[in-house]
Image (cartoon, rainbow, N blue to C red):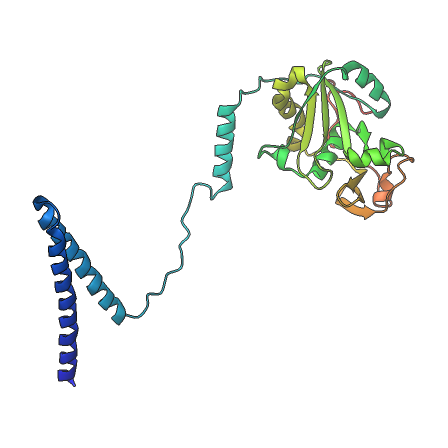
Length: 298
């Protein structure tokens, strides 16, 4: 048995030797056609390459197939949201001029019945807008919660969807759940509205283009109270999903946030009342009274 194995091995190595020798002769013949100074190097390189291929093929044929290993997860710079946020903020700070600081000393919320006054005072200019585009609490908090905070700090909105008064088609084309119209420091107009009703996060703010460079600072100075002071008050609004045509009743009952599909309401009636959201619920009481520098709710 051992002699047979020995003869088999000798036969294998004879074949390998024959292949290598044939390759060597081919390399010698090929080298004859190239300049003399590169002949030795060419012969050695061809011989090494072919010998390696022959031996490698033979060794691989005697071994069982190699099983690939599972890939390993390697950490990359974007694995953490915190690092991404830091990079995002750094690039934004470097690419955009910082907003000058601003102090909001006085504010006036425009009630529903004084919309015409606001339009006459501020409606002649062009408006610039700022959306929820940063990873900050004011931009990542659910709009439902921010709406309750606006109700708690400033009272009822200037405009809601129910104010369309039968203009249902217009409402479906140009939908906002709510709008607050403010005059800051007696001269700066500011609109605060939802992004996409109760399905989104953050708020959209707008002002006259004259104050456009100040808008990020205005938003932070005026609306950060919605995060730092958790005053919440009950409310109820209508909203429509334009894509599906489905109407919703959304609000806050003083304890829970509500979002309920409803039939199309009659916009010719008044704004929805809290009892339609959850029966036997009264509006909550604000946790903080307004300072002497703020305007009372109307």
